[in-house]
Image (cartoon, rainbow, N blue to C red; front, side, top):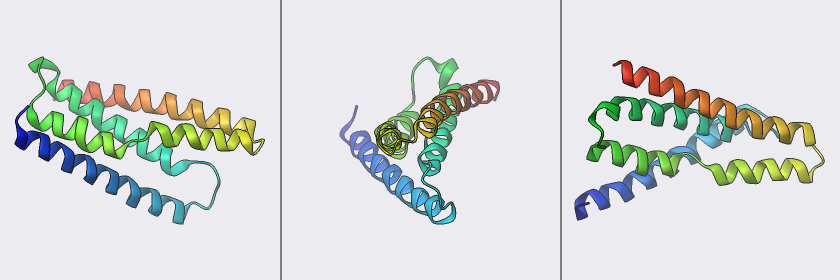
Length: 125
């Protein structure tokens, strides 16, 4: 990896984190609930885009610099498994066991489904 790609990768990761912060704030300001919808929306949309990106580069067998910058940079900064885990644990600590189960399962199922849809669409293009 060239130093320029490394620098752009770092910048993309930072932009992904800023995008996550902005979208999280927008969703939380509109949905007044303790269920972690913002993190769910962020992780599912990031999984969809990563699946699409993977599908688009699938036939090349080797990722391009742009796909690495978007996938490993922007989307790694954008999506957040640790926040999803933390929010699920917070629901457990609040005694909201049903909501915590739904949070964990919904996040997993929707994220994997979105990645598969993106992969299919990307491979078809």
